[in-house]
Image 1 (cartoon, rainbow, N blue to C red):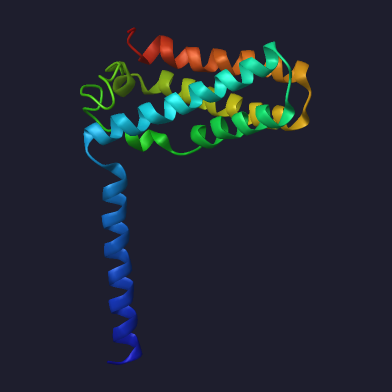
Image 2: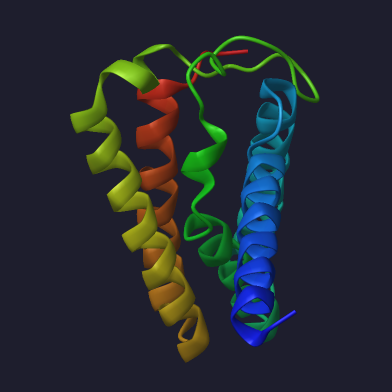
Length: 156
């Protein structure tokens, strides 16, 4: 087998593997719901860690760790887990995603963009160690979370 044929075969195999891997990342609707619920629970835990530090004894490292987790999830392209039809079904529990998530793209873009900005700013401010600045940014981040909850999440 010559080098050109081998290169074509290797490239084709890599493309096929990449296609299969991306299909697995998307998963079934139940998987999408479960994965995003897990991410939101992890962010809620991280928000709780920041809140405990802001309201109690402040530990810069714990706040920075929690802020970095939130930032990582906010920038993880989690939008791929919101395929049409995933407003119905069950992951770990029934999804509370409103159908408006798929129809109100303008509001979704604003809300998601604001959350990403506030998460990035939270990580930046947390790294500074300034407890007062962290407290102020924590409020802004919480409001960004609430903006999505109010518009796109059903009450329990």
